[in-house]
Image (cartoon, rainbow, N blue to C red; front, side):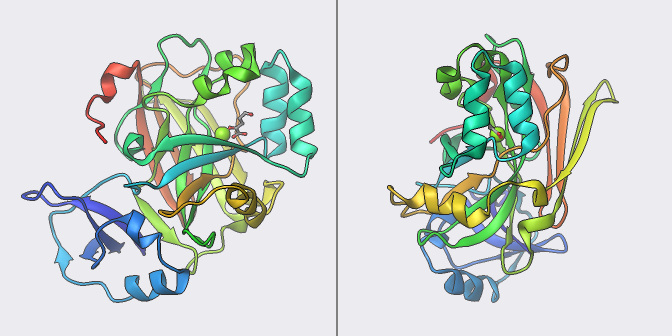
Length: 286
Ligand code: DO4
Ligand code: MG
């Protein structure tokens, strides 16, 4: 079962439901943000009794309202290595990998998130660009992990590599944050050892593939959530992308027209075509 946001053919209002074996059913809650304001036990109870079948649902990005997307960095050995190769300041990545405090950064407001099938972007002023395949935690306002999503933390390696203080520009821009459409409830799946796979195709040919497992994540999920909630409140919950364990060699860069597919067993699949520039994202509105 997945928790989804959807829109009906004849109704502009986004709604919340559950999707099981391809069938969407409605839920009596106005938004995912409202759902994430509830305790885990109440979310589980609400989603266990869905209403009518919705036969014309178009799935939307799985977050809304005041729910923010955050991300963790350098949480896998492969990410540490890749950053040390690309950066003018290699040492800081080694230090953060070993430190008690994780790297956490703001990634996206809910309205800026793109979903499966929509484009992801390369910045027009960037020269070296990658998708970052990541498992994302969906956390309620009480810091309980309610579910999981597939996330693509699109990144400019050239901008971050030039100077780590450019990280927000390397990570936060139109089309930089993609999430899979359905939240897989945490009470249905153990996220601690899930295969993660990426495939980038160019003119129908795979130009980069990779696999890893969430078991290689250096930090427990609960530690990442604890640090996120240490000094801030999330009344509409948060999505916390847990970092990438997959990075290509430095001679690979994404190009316009590539298609990125990320699969996490038991959680979902996320496929997005790649475009260049912010003009492709005027369809996103708060
Ligand atoms: O330190 C830069 C960002 C790292 C990141 O996004 C990752 O490891 O996934
Ligand atoms: Mg990342």
